[in-house]
Length: 254
Ligand code: AMP
Image (cartoon, rainbow, N blue to C red; front, side, top):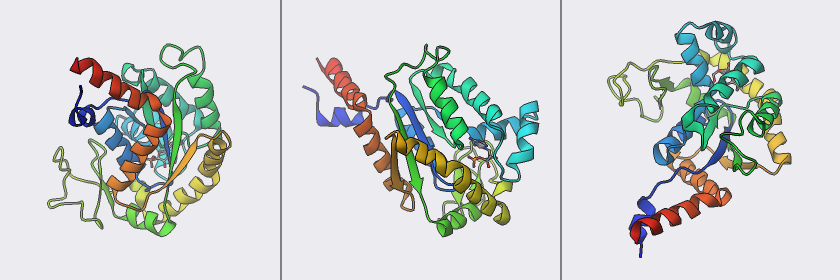
C-alpha cells in the first residue's frame, strides 16, 4: 500500500487553464510563480511577456510601451497574439496559469474561442478544466503594496519594502540582480491602473461569474494563506488532479 507521506510528496501538474484575475498589486504574479514551483504549471504573464518585448526592443515592444508605461491597456489583438503564441508552446500542452489575461471582455471572448477552436485542438479539448480565481483586495492595501513593490528585472520576482521582503543589499535573492521600481508603479499611474481595472476588467469577472466559472478569494493575507486557498479550489474543481495523485501512488507502490 502507498503511505500517506508518499501521497503528499507526489506533485502532479493538473491539466487545465487557471485564470488569475484581480487588481494590479493583488499578488497574481506571486501566486502564479507558486503554482509553477509546486505543480509545474507554466505561468503566462502578459505583463512580463510585454516587458520582455520592450526590453528586447521588438516592434511589438515599441507598440506596447506607448500604453504600458502610462498604465493603459495594450491593444487586444497584440495581447491575444502573444498569448496564442505562448499557449502553443509544448510546455503548455497540459494547461497553464494565465496571470493578467484576460483583462477585457474582448480578450475573454477570444480565449474562449481559441481554447475550443480547431487550431488549438492538438493541445486542448472540450473537457479541459477551466477556472477563474479572482483575488480581491481593498484599494488602500493595493496602493501600499504597489508603492512598496520592487521587482527583479531579470526573473520578475516581486519584493516589498513594507513587508520587509527587500533585503540588504537591494538585490534579488535568486539571481543577485539589482531590484528596480516599475515605472507604472508611480503614484498617479497606480490610480489610473486601478480605474482601468474597474472599467475594463471587472466586467470580465462578471462574464465568468455568469458562466459559473468564477471563484473569489481575499488577497490581503499572507501569500501562503492565499496559496493554500487556491490549491483547495484547484482540488475541488480539477478532480483529475486528485485522481492522478492516487493513480501515480498506486502504480509506483505495487
Ligand atoms: P502587469 O504586469 O500585469 O501589471 O501588466 C503591466 C502592463 O502591461 C499593464 O498595465 C498593461 O499596460 C499591459 N498589459 C498586461 N496584460 C495586459 C492585457 N491582458 N491586456 C492589455 N494590456 C496588458
